[in-house]
Length: 359
Image (cartoon, rainbow, N blue to C red; front, side, top):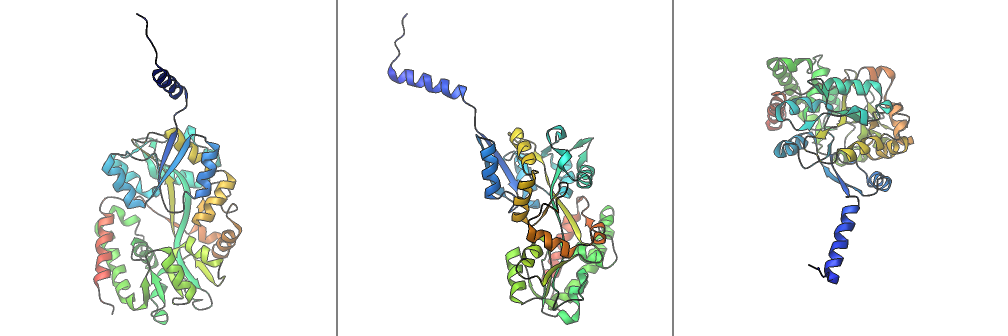
């Protein structure tokens, strides 16, 4: 039987044929931190990879785990948790898939950083992350007003009453513990001991409340207090201090003498991500020297690539070199894998400090 094709039917057939023969656009759904996917980097990536679009959801460690746990690892193709937050979350919630390192330009990665991340994220012989950016938390000071401030709990000295700031978060608990001569990371294996260490730190931080002008919540809050002279020192991310150094060279980052706290933000593949090829392309793309410099200008952090410090923008490079001696880098206390129970203790100790009246 003969079949008559109407013009509309012919158009539909041709449209279907065209769609079948055309490449399907990929979408890379990136779950990351603020500043880790600047517009210029996305523009260059999409230009180099026609048909691939990048969608960015900003998050933090706790939210990343919660989002991926809620979906069983679906909804995102590439996540950027801290390297110490992967092992426990994976073992408890099964939200990531192993990395295929043959698809990653590991020859570009700083070997010490790669080895550290591999050691922390290897489960059952499979590796679940590679490093991206790293940095530290420590102290920021106006060296003309607080030249003798060298360690975490120096913020509590009487002469700085009402002139310091800190964030009410676990960083100051961990830093305070190291300042007291304890090793809180080693105590993760004995939560009773860990709790006792943090309670001692809490006692000190409650005594210290009169020294605190305000507890900062974000980098902008802290920057405004520091630049205005309301405070002379603060506990901070190094990247915040580096940015302010460019505006006032008297404001410097001080790695605490008991050790700055090191962090590494990584790349990990959510278990039910559907764009692994695009994810690996993004990982390799952001390791290129010119992209590293753009990324570091946005984040203030150091890329975990060979020569990452030298690839910093000039102002950030000057700030890092003004802050760190080689001995300071060797003394960095890189985070240990968070184990179940640790964050519950942290939260309760922080609530106790918040509720306490200044003495």
